Length: 467
Image (tube, rainbow, N blue to C red; front, side, top):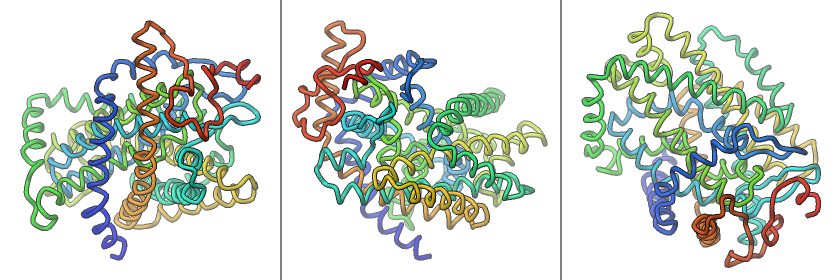
């Protein structure tokens, strides 16, 4: 009850305005980067797929898979079903709105992560909000606050949500079984996470999207009604929630944000690890990740629920509702298939969330004992999430999401001019016919705190060694 009350004040009177205001600000200052460069986003992802790297360097595609592993989780299935039950079809409209604005936010934070990244002694890079806050804003205390917040939020709180839905989808699950598997992966470190993500993410995403497409195609005559219900209910006045900023809008925005993570400062941690010739490359790639998780995967879940249309009468919510809907469409075997999807989605998010925690533990301390204590905490919270109530774990996630947004969005608004300058340089080079733009830190209005980028720094292994 206490968590729900705090959430009410934070989201109703603060977070909602910060998110929409910042999204509009980034959209206009980047001149609608999330729309103008959609084609470039897809090209960059396609060109980096299968790219080989050396000495612990991570390709742009691998970094994209890690961030997608974290973003594509139970929020895309259970979270969307919850949104429809609480906020109705109109919640999906607001989920789309926050994704469109959030793509520009994601571009800015991930470009900044690349600008302020640091090289590792044994190859590769690391970085994220804790680093651009410390180096770009020259605020060590603020950076420590963020590092602590994101470590707790993703490593522990969000992972309790993933474990909760994983356990709910497998009602006969022996809880220690999946806890043991999590234990093996998290103690395997970042390299183990990257390998799992690169294999698991494409498979699970295509399989789930394919299932949703089948449901949509076989019910294609109902699609006009589904779209009508989404748009007609988007502006429903809700007295209990306070009009337009009530249940419908807040529910859609919360569940959309949990899914795409734009503005939370999580994705930049993985974006910073990528080997790139220009910071804008990762900014564009990760902006597309917002579209993938929300407009494609979340929308697929919403359509499964809305096509059947009995979400208000079954008494079910979350993954149980989606399993019920698929059973009606595909037969009694469908809930078992959904359980498999949940296992893959939840597990990928569990290890992806862990990844963010380890990066920020590294920012706080280099002592191995603290990293191992964090790992034990990850496993413990996964167990607690498996046996806790659905309402408690989701409310706790919303609370810590609000804290992350307050800290990270404040920082990227203050550093936005750096990302805008980098984008202008990238666009200028492309206009001059340069196929692969190379970054020169001199284009930035403020060059303090830059550790990696030199004058036209390239990213091949020989240049890295010389640097």
